[in-house]
Length: 302
Image (cartoon, rainbow, N blue to C red; front, side):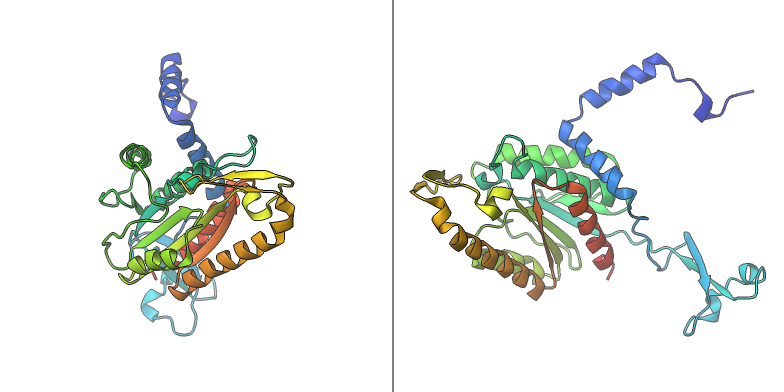
């Protein structure tokens, strides 16, 4: 009698091959899969009612429901009348992008990741969640066709690395790209560019009928300015440096300007029907990923 697969002993050779394969995966991809797996436990997939063949659930018949939806076999088991709902099976295409410019290399302390590392983690973990939900993903700016499947995650990372090698001075905002109407884009960056430049970037996609989501990644020092005394600030994108004698004297003014800027980004996003969220690198990535995933679940297929 053959033992079921779950009870069969696994050979040492298989175990070593698995360890060898995992050793060649970039640590960031491993971390992204771990984050995605954690978040996926907090959602029940992106299933929604629609035209499909996959059974989803029974629910009680209600006013306005077609009698053709009634499942008579299920209804015969009890007094209430039940309808049979199937799952929406139309896969959506989502284009992902993250800011690779110099300002994203910033981190205020050695105990934090820099902004670009967190942006990469959020992008790959979101891609993993979308792929698990049967959606198609692509990296904006590569010209690649959206695709699904577990191998897509590795291809995304390869494309990100290729973009970094190719771009001498990466832009802090995505370049215009013609996309199919009703597609989705997720843009991840610090969005510290002038508001007018951000507006033009969003408009270039929104005018195509694209709906999008902005995830603003900030280091805690960027929204608290905790420094004091004489400090020299070096520009990370060839802006030069500036020496300030008493940083604490300008803290309130700085925080007011940052608040105004972020409110401006949120207003721009809302004016185009987009969403905007802020993620801090000293916070857990899971909470931001879950919130973004739920927003995508609500808008995709609309």
